[in-house]
Amino acid sequence: MPARLLIEGGVPLKGEVAVSAAKNAALPAMAASLLTARPLTLGNVPELGDVRTMLKLLQTLGARVERQGRGTTLTVERVTSDVAPYDLVSTMRASVLVLGPLVARHGSARVALPGGCAIGVRPIDQHLKGLARLGAEIAIENGYVVARASRLKGARIATDMVTVTGTENLMMAAALAEGVTVIENAAREPEVGDLAALLTTMGARIGGIGTGRIEIEGVPELGGALHRIVPDRIEAGTLLVAGAITRGDVRVTDVVPGHLAAVLAKLEECGVMVETGATWVRARAEGRPRPADVMTSPFPGFPTDMQAQLMTLLGLADGQSTVTETIFENRFMHAAELARMGASIATDGAIAIVRGVEAYQGAPVMASDLRASAALVLAGLAARGRTEVSRIYHLDRGYEKLERKLGALGARVERRP
Ligand code: EPU
Image 1 (cartoon, rainbow, N blue to C red):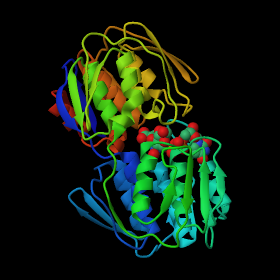
Image 2 (cartoon, helix red, strand yellow):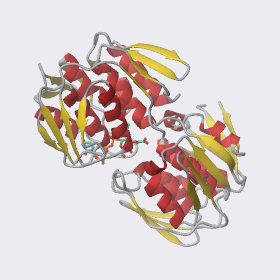
Image 3 (tube, protein in one colour):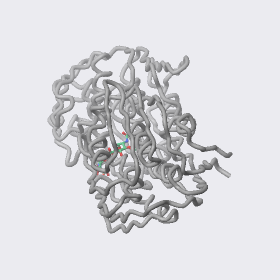
Image 4 (tube, rainbow, N blue to C red):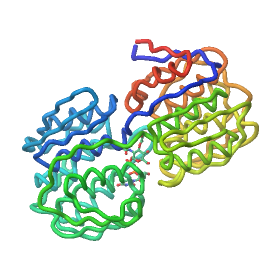
């Protein structure tokens, strides 16, 4: 049987916990190693399923990987293969992040089309349209994107919607293109900013980071770099909700509080007492949360990656809340599992109406994707009795030792093989 988590609920979590580096910044940073023959050292790579998948993929493309503690050095002296195979891409969609760097440096890439996943259809048409604007020839052959270019040329690209990995892919490709590229409607997520900071250390010329208009002046070659990845704002948010939902008192450290602004504002609206310092945030709660309405949107809006966790908190509120998911069309899989624990949630398309209940009851539940599994763990921590969350390989893709961190805060949680 795949690993499960057993949780005895009802313990108010208390204490301090350090947040790991962001998964969604680590993955593009690792892919950036394909842009240079020089070593790229990342000082704090988190131990995650998705990180292991990305390492494996980069190794198949020619990367040499040296790990020393948390430090990971990636060196791609030569790209030895331009194929991102289906078995890797289908386990992790972020594999598509190798497309831009491969075309830019190597002149060709063959990347399996990821297809749909548990939270939505998730096409990559904007990545492809953008690369075509930069002069790549793109074809779809036998389920693979085949992209070719001699040298990419800077261009003005306007994406139809805000896309995080799309912006990252195009930024990496443009960094080695000839001339200036402008990406309009660019993602403003801190993880995009972190990648830009890394590329800048490697010698790229990038302006407009944190705005919707990024300008990149291509250079013929990039060098190596030493880089620390930004803290994981989603892990931080999840741990703060763990404090609030158990009516405890949790302080997360090693964070950038500004990256959590929308989440903290919503927690305060729910009656959670929030305090922030330069690199820490504390959340305390007494009694039931207040209901609140929330709508996900690109940064600096409320992140879709915190929607399931917040819904779990709202499920215990003293009244009715509305949750609107605008980024992914199928990201309410946790609602049905939460219902098994006593939640009262009705979903209709992009909207969930959450009628708060007084308590959750422990139950066996099944994780469907990464953030849904975090939501079930949170519900288990608050529930009366024992919860068993199965299929936690989803959780392990994106949370580093979550049960240990929760355990250190007093949670009764155990991993079973
Ligand atoms: N979209 C398109 N065409 C494209 C690209 C995106 O239609 O070419 C649509 C998507 O289907 C979605 C929306 O645009 O409806 C936004 O998707 P985006 O491209 O921003 O998502 P992503 O880059 O694939 C990253 C994170 C996700 C996070 C989203 C949204 C990484 C590796 N993944 O995905 O993280 O939910 O941005 O913020 O950065 C997670 O960590 O649990 C996770 C799913």
